[in-house]
Every structure is written in structure tokens, then in C-alpha cells.
Image (cartoon, rainbow, N blue to C red; front, top):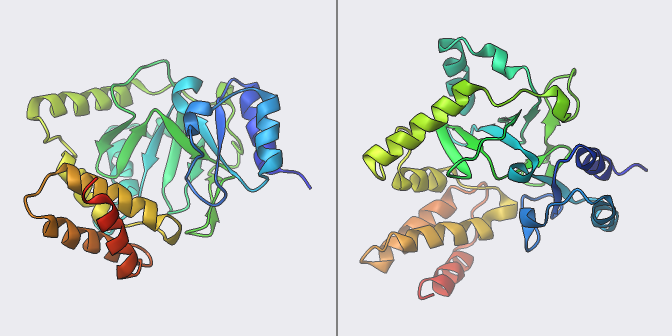
Length: 264
């Protein structure tokens, strides 16, 4: 039986796209993660022959790629609608003529080539829409939390072929620059996001069952870095974050996360 992920990884590597593996059904890479991405077919064969169910990631920076990540992660911010409106308002529908994937939570990844360097790995363009320039998961990866795959969106492009995708449009580079300039002018307050705003969105978005522990540790770290005077505030917010997961962890496990990290 053909290992579709291995086939895809080898096809990408043959084009100069740097790939790496992730644990089956998850977005979690092994230690080293995207930094171990390679085009070496021998290494790639070993990875995916040993782990036929592994997911597939791409190191965007090494591969000369960027991805517009459009999310529908909560009820208040619909990146798909926001991006559609932005494209229509600016007569930019033609920039969708490139390789696009449907993500498991009904969002989209839109792929572009670029030689541009960016100051941040993930840059908010408008609410619900980010420009990814570091790493991304790619089809046919499968996410246990949603029981769905990443899937090519258009029949005319069933796979990522570098010669068949657009250069990153100058309008998007301009939007990225606007976002960065606004961030510099306003300190933590930006046109779409502040550090606090991003954290609030993450807390309210929650996560799926397969990544709850890792995600809550991540949230706990951010809450600690805010340095509230009362540790009880962190405990309350951490519990609120847990309540937004698809299936909250038992309180005892949340308490273990809190106690394990509060004094580190």
C-alpha cells in the first residue's frame, strides 16, 4: 500500500522544499522539529517508513515559501469572511490563483513563493488572518482532534508544485509592512493585535482534546510572563482557558500543570 505522506514528502524534496515529520494525528514535531527539515531523500524515506502515520511539515523559510493562514477559531473572529471582504474591497481576487489547502477547522492555507525576509515568524495581517513564514503543516496530514485531513482546495492543483504557485503579492507585503509599522508606532498596541489581545484570543479559542496539556502549559507560561501580583489570578484564568477546550481536562490535571510551573 502506498504511503501517501512519504510520496508527497519526496515530491516536495525533489523541488527543493525542506520537509520534516510530526507525531501522528498531531501538530507536534519531535525535538528539533522544523530545524531538522531536509531535502535528503534517504533521511525522508527513513522517517516515513518508520512512521507511516506521521504528519508532514514544511520549513517555509528554508523553502522560500510563505503561507497566509486563515482561521475560524472562535465565534467572534471569522478570518475567512474578513479575508474575503479584504480581497473584494481591494480587487484582489486574482491572488487566490495559487495552491490552497483546506485546514481541519474549516480555515485555509494559501501558499506563495517569496525571497522576502520578515521580522517575525507569524504576522497578523487582519483579525483571523496571519502570514506564516517559519513552518506549516501540509496535506495529507491528519488531525485526531477533528478527525479530518488537510486537503487541496482546487482540483486543478492537487499538490504543491513550486512552478505553479504565485510569488507573494506586493499587496500582501505592503499589508505586512503596515502591520509592522503600526506595531512600532503604538508599542504593544497594533492594528489587529496587542500581546495581551493575542493571549486573550488564545485563551478564548481553546484547543482540541489531543493537545490540551501542551496548550495549557503554553498558556500558563504566558500568564506567568505577565507577572500578576496574585498567583490566584493565574489559577482562575488557567481554569477559564481549560473550560474553552473542546473537552476540558479534569481539575486535578489543571492543578498539576499550575503547581508544576508556578514556581519555575
